[in-house]
Image (tube, rainbow, N blue to C red; front, side):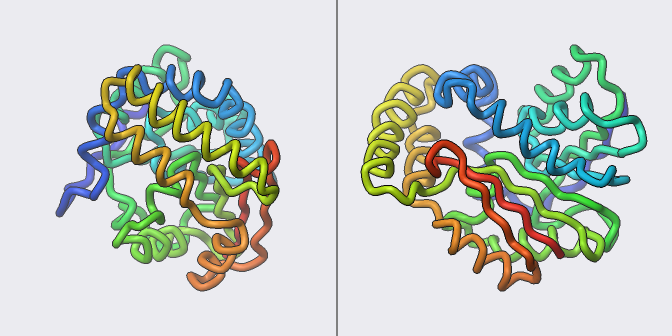
Length: 243
């Protein structure tokens, strides 16, 4: 498996400390707190990333590597996969998972989404799974991240986002917010031993943008043809935008 590269970081990102501390039970809690639906939604995102047999795909904010590993299992060998994250503990876990799965077609990169170590217009697809919220929700570097994503994509390249969303139905939204408070913030914080991290995850999901707001955000940063597909009544969704 490719050893990947490390890029020198000029500053710590706002959430870096939190994500450096949670990897031990991160995957287990993701499966439990989403009833394993995150795997199904990530699979749908991976297939959207691989439509048209792209030559190069970046899994941005790969975390423990679930999306990049899914991509690596489904490609035909002609697609090059990059997986980038700023958290070294997360990236180390992703590498171990890829090694265990005997996948050698992923290049892991330790780097910052605000300064991607890639040339202009070199990627066919940028995918991101359950981390777009971290880049954009009350994040002072939001515009930097979106600029970099747009910069590294080829013309007509796709930005594929799978993320929590806001149910349109009022009852569904109330139930979703109660679930976030009780299970994600409460039980997730208790099981992980990092209550602050899971309070943040619950609060950011509860207050995250509507699909129309995401579309406007992407359109104002150089993307067009934005499409959104809701999952399970809108508690999550798949957004695809074209450069």
